[in-house]
Length: 193
Image (cartoon, rainbow, N blue to C red; front, side):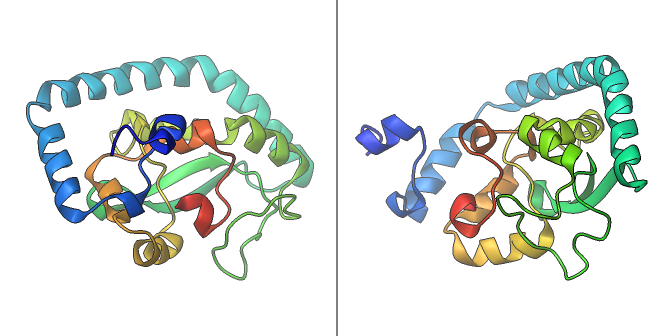
C-alpha cells in the first residue's frame, strides 16, 4: 500500500489505511538498532538549539519589547503540553494573544482570531513565536524535529477521535515537524487528523 498515489503525493499514510498489526510491525522494524541515531539526534539538538538561542536572542529581545509596548502585558506565555510517553511538560512562547485570551478555557485558535495581537499575527505567520522553545530542546524535553506537542485539554479529545494518535508519544515532540512544513496553524480536529 506504500505505492498508493495518495501516499506518494502527500507523503503521509492516512490512519484509515493502517491496522494495529501493520503498525506494530512497522515500529518494531524502525526501533531496531536506532540507539546510535537517537544519540546523534540528541547531540544535534543540543548543538543546534544552543547556537540558535545565542544567535536569535537579540531578535527575541527586540520582539519582546514590541509585545510589551503593544499592550503592556507579559512577553512570554507558558503552556502545559503532552510529550514523550504522555508526560506533561511546560513550553514557553512569545505571547501572541491578548492577556486573558482563554478566560473561558482552552480552545483552538481560529483564522482571523480577534484574540491575536497585531505583533502576534506576524509572530504566528512567521512561527517566530515558537523560538523560546529552543530552551525545551536544549534541556531535552523536546527535539528540533518531531510531532508538535498538544495541550492536555485538546490532546485528551484527539486521543479519542484519531486512530493511533498515541503513537506520537513514542518520540519527543518537536519544535517543527511534518505538519508545520505542510500546513498552517492547526485550528480544528480535522487539521490535527
